[in-house]
Length: 191
Image 1 (cartoon, rainbow, N blue to C red):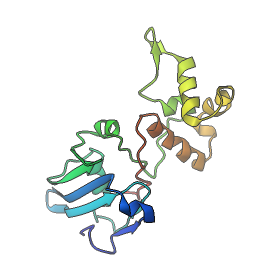
Image 2 (image 1 turned 45 degrees about the vertical axis):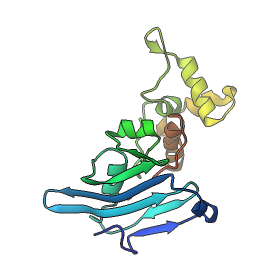
Image 3 (image 1 turned 180 degrees about the vertical axis):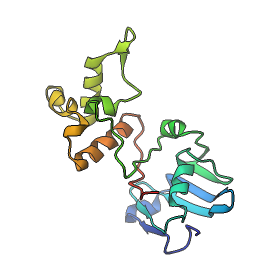
């Protein structure tokens, strides 16, 4: 199914966003797998302030489009531009360095780690080869915009003690810790 069909993509633009150039633009994205044409010249653009929903049947290409954007899959043809510059995300990590992240429907926090550790996972501040816990907690407090005195109550709680909605909120925080703020893409429907 082609995502450019009217029933496949629903766009709800913010009125002021229409006057802005696209923050993200995907043009003629094509992706095939052996025996399957997953994406056929799909166009998608996103302006600051817009909210989009990708809707469609199983196999319509929703997840494939997001995987191309986030570097999980590479498109066969087509162009992706971010802030007017052509990009090619080589991996999910590379996409994150470009400011592109996806929040999937499933929560992927590590239950044995604190909220602060989950927020900075893979980017823990170090001192003399070990994690600098004071800086880690201070950085998490800064990201969460909470006074450092409250960081222990908010950041030291493990995921297992959080409700599902709280887990999703804290799952968004690592994106804020990566630098440039970008609109989040997700949650996505199950594959």
